[in-house]
Length: 119
Image (cartoon, rainbow, N blue to C red; front, side, top):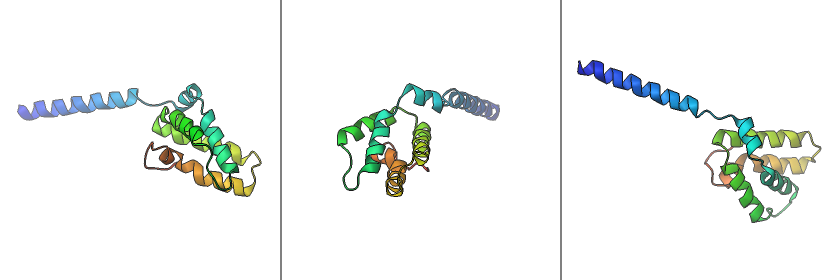
């Protein structure tokens, strides 16, 4: 009898956990639309143009605040989309190379996680 109760409690817990996960699923396009990423776009654009120094720390700080408001999965979606648009935008090869180096590491630069975003 105790075994049946334990199995029931376990299955109930799994069912509740699955429901919670499903209800917290993130809609990235909607989230990105609600949280414009203009500071990250400006930061990455200026970083791509810079040859030696990083752009102003205040711009990076604002970018990190915006990026932190997105769900972790959506951060990479937004970064990939920005890079994709720039690849078609006529940036020269050295600038694009700097962007491709910096953009994937932006969450890490902002201390928002250890990983990088494949672009």
